[in-house]
Image 1 (cartoon, rainbow, N blue to C red):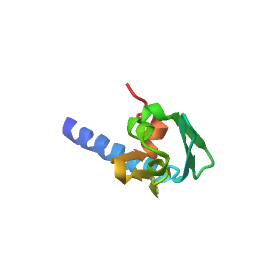
Image 2: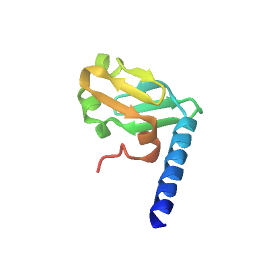
Image 3: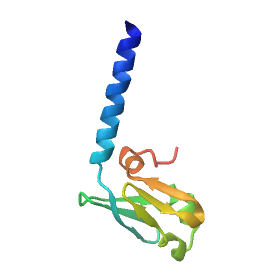
Length: 97
């Protein structure tokens, strides 16, 4: 009996996670200044974080920083092997520990 409840809870949790991800805003553009990176989202929010939180980007030159690729909920910097997801940005998991 307990196994059935556990399986149902996992299924509900998975469904909730999938729906919440689909409803998250997507990246529209990225901006940099000397000390921070700003993420412009489809829901009109702009979230800025210190470049120091993303060491690979902090060390990169401006050409590398601006060579990002946006794919919906993710931003990729292929030349430095860096990926930032909107879910990580919104839930605070990008903050260094």
